[in-house]
Image (cartoon, rainbow, N blue to C red; front, side, top):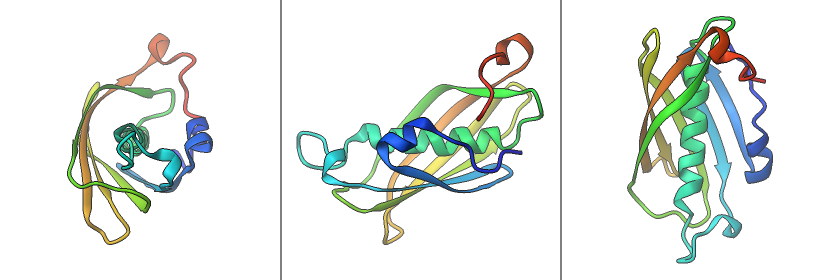
Length: 136
């Protein structure tokens, strides 16, 4: 199981991995004006990024040695606007599979209100497919 993976993009955007348990990962981010879209609210791509990270880490937490994973599909529903706030993305493996797994993520604001909900289909890679894609 992974402990606390290094995510280079996290250094750029400013999010952090808070916890990793088997089948679950929590990512937090303090949003700022620099993360805004042209309308002034938080850019949806930021929400997608922290959701994808939380779900990918949750999926990776159930993989065996020599396995890695990739996101095949991601869907997100934006449920309330955010300007600047501390967000918590909670990724959970809903249906683990030998090759294909279903993972979901709730993104909550600092008042524990649901900001966005995302789902993802993750694929487990082994052997040659996994070469050069190991979690750091």
